[in-house]
Structure formats: C-alpha cells, structure tokens
Length: 352
Image 1 (cartoon, rainbow, N blue to C red):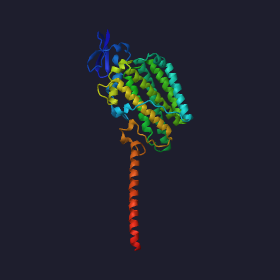
Image 2: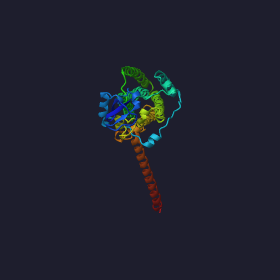
Image 3: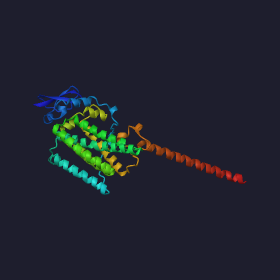
Image 4: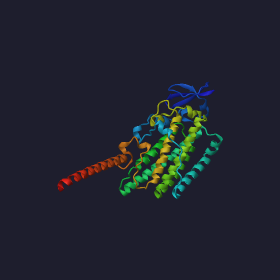
C-alpha cells in the first residue's frame, strides 16, 4: 500500500491510502501514487499544508516586493563555485569565522555525518535550508538599516548601497517562504531559530558598526558556502538520491516569484536559488572592496529590472552618465580641432 497524493490546488496536496505503484508529477485534480511520500509525511505538501502556507501561496503579489529575481538559461549555466583568497587580516578573520560557524553547524545538525554516509534525505535538506535562510536574511537588513540611519545622521546620500542590501534581504526571505511551502517546522525548531536569530542579530549589528568591510567579506564567504550547499543538493538530485525533489512540481510561490511555467520542477527552483546565492556572494565581496562612502556602481541581478529606481550614482545610470560624458568630451575635442584648423587657415590671410 502506497499513499496516494491528491492535488486539490496547485502546490497543495493531501494523502490517502490506496494501492498503486506509479510515481509521477501530478497535474491539477489528478491522483497519482507516490511511494516516496511514505517517507516524507512531514512535508506540508503531503499532509495538506498549513492554512498559513496555503494563504501565503494564494496571496503572493509581486507588486509588494522591492525586486524580482530573473535568470536566463545562459545565466544559470554560468554559475560556478568560486573562492576569493583572503588578502589581509580582515579577510582572514571573516573567512575563519565562516569556517568555524559552518563546521559547528554541520556537526550539530548531523549534516557532516549524514553527508558522508549518504543519509541526507529530503526532510533533512528542507530543515537545513529553512534554518540557513532564517540566518541569511539578517545581514542585508541590518546593513541596510544601519546605512539608512547613517545617512540620516550625516544628512547625505547613500549612493546605491541601501537598495541593494534590502533587496538581498528580501530575496533571502523569499527563499525561506518557498522552503516553508514544503515543510512547516515544529516548536523546537522554531525555538532554535529564535535563539539563533537573537545571537546572530546582536553580534552582526555590533560587528557592522565596528567594521562594515569585515561584515561584507563575512557574508561573501558565507554565500560561497551557500553555493556549495545548493550545488551538493543539485548533485544529489541528479544522482537519483532525492526522488521526491526530482519529480515534485515547483511550489506556486516559487513559480510566481521566479516566473516559472506550470510544469517547472522543484529542482529548477533550487537551481535558481543557487544563482541568487552566487550573486549575493559577488555583491558582498564587491561591497567589501569599496570604501563605506564610495558609490555602489554595481548592478546586481535583483536590480536589473528596476532601472526606474536607480539614482545617478548607481548601476546602469552611472554607466550611461559616463557614456554621455565621454561623448560630450569627444564632441568638444572635435569642435576644438575644427576651430584650430579654422584659425590656422585664417592666419595666413590676415598676414597677407
């Protein structure tokens, strides 16, 4: 006897017992057998989902978001695992902090043991993703808030940092909401998240006030680890170790946020999330290379579709300004050369 998965609405399913042997992605109002579901009854999609989860899916409105993540197939194919070598003591401190946190979390969550023994299952991966995304959404919001207050105190412009940082925080929060549409954590897990957030928020806020460069480098190295984690997840899916993730339809929230077709799979969502993490990695390494008062001229993927929100010192606009300035310089140079030729041609006439 295998559980039957009945989809009553996109992304919301319930299970009943009936004899069947077929595993399939289920179209709307269809009934299919899912042997894998017998091992994954903790997933919201297999137990009807919570009312809160269904409400979030039904009422996702992109007009309420700052930005929307958009990737092409070529962009996804270019994603790669990279590492920036530490160049000074600040870089080394940030790198070793990330390694210490990563190692402790891997041991405490049993990820290292399960990963070595091949025991990581779908439920383990979802729990890991949910917890990590609750942490990943903190740095961008803290940095954006502190830079906002800094701009108010000094009564001067921020030049393109705040929007990027807040967009990053929102993007990480969307990753969390997508993962929550797969599984709703229990009270113990939620208590761990609250405790972890309290500690990390306090530490990161103080660290950013003391050394913003260290914090951005820290996030850059943290996102390097996130790219490794999602790459490992995709490798396990492609190797057939996670059949539920391989065949499951992408949650509705993910399809709306990433503008995916109805038949998109969960694997497609994880690939897009990995691309987001890759962009956050590069953005924070870029921020760490800048002085705190230096304009941000980098247009990351979250702001490419929001040209109307750019200021004159950021991203696409600054490139356009430079192009116009160069064009004006060329025109002035041409005009100067032309005037010189005219003056040179008129001088012999006056002499005569």
